Length: 160
Image 1 (cartoon, rainbow, N blue to C red):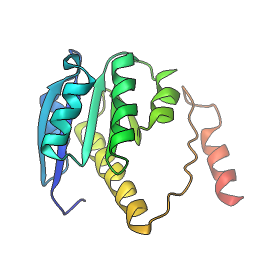
Image 2: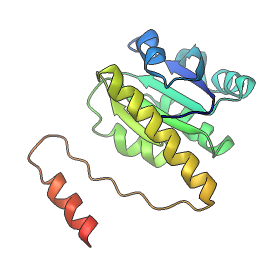
Image 3: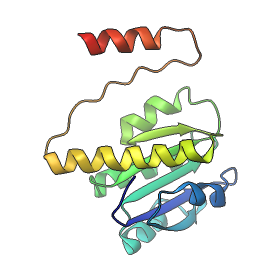
Image 4: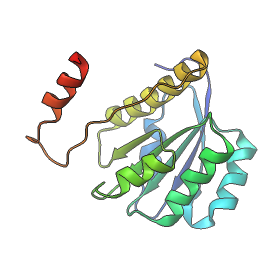
């Protein structure tokens, strides 16, 4: 659980339930919300105004606006935690979101507790890396369905 206060900016499209996302934020989190349709520059101005620690981008499709926002936010604020919420199949979007700088991608719908855990995990991982001054590589084992060997591959990586 995150104990220090966190400022969050929730950027959303028409498919994102903003109230649900805000309810899932960790305790001690103040948040503001702005539509993705306002454009990258306007969203980033709001982001700078509140000095956000956490940027949450909720989108239903792999829009260039969402990816452009992730890339520009990462370029301007490398210490900010960026979590993308995606309502459709993450195929294609997953790799592009991580490539432009997202810290985590959460496929929706999820229970509120799972979403809270994802936010806390992303914040803790970024703060730990920032405190250490070194960024460690992250290896993700991802598969679109069960039974593809993700667990076996992860275990073998851990042993190696």
